[in-house]
Image (cartoon, rainbow over all chains, first blue to last red; front, side):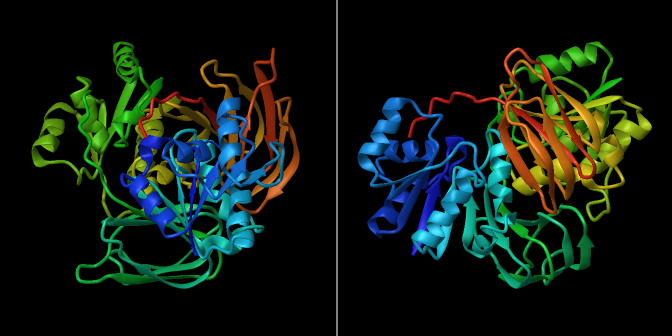
Length: 228
Length: 228
């Protein structure tokens, strides 16, 4: 079953169609998780989450009461803890609710230590096994995660660019059949190979690597009218 | 001498006072660098950069012509290259212009492979030596970088929170005298210790570590009026 989790990041970075997407998910009886302030955002969108997770310490008492009244499964996390709220969410989504695919929203921007927790959490051995099932999405990016092996990278029509973020020490990384191929890269520290593209008339290419965790970052430009 | 570099990231994440800050820098004959579209943003702010750096492939011909007419030192980078534009900028700022402190603006948000390049570039041995002189700043965060050793972390009045992003394998990391202390943490992969704070009546604490590169992320909340 598909699942969606809304975190507490800035609402102006949400995918444009987030409300329609979540309402459609609700109609299809897919799972919806709210993490911390994300649970309140869901209530404000008129969508009661199936599960609310967090220490909720950034919420007003009346907002927390609202969540406690409507949500049937609430997981209170310990603010001084081994697992972050996001990691606890992953365990709940996959171990308790047996989702086979999770899209995480509201995970980018804002306080950058929070964003980096969400980007890097799949390095934690306690949740690393879930990496292939997780997508992190905002209005300009879609991020997928890969453990070692051979993987087919599929084009997503909306996103012209794709970059690869090697999130830890990496052994023998190859990009095969993209606009910019790469052979046998190994490195001891994180590194980003950005701004790759699919070949014209090709809807996929391959990556392989023997060790590491790699984030495939699909992205697009957004034209902004800025007033300097 | 102080230096500022404006990159091509989203303008809505700029620090609120960016124009005043850069005009003041210009009056004080401090150095101003424009990287790629950041060079054009500077022109549009009425500030001619001392140096423009990039492959400029995202600019219209007339915008590039405008930069070429007004900027005296232009460094054209090779789009297929060993150093990214940001890394070339670091070398120019510190090796050629001998700046002793650099604030990088326009480096966050937008396409996340671009942001991660800017966050992770100081891991590259070719530029790692500059880490202690670099600050990365946006409207909600100020990020400083530390190489191994003992460091005093100073309070910045504007930012109530501080998190530490261990950007690579780390040996014996200690936080001493903060709200949440940490003892002898070692890890093989990146990890974030977020949402720490200074103790009341204390304007500093210490960190020490023996191996790795650590980003200290100062941050603040921003109240947004959101219309769901």
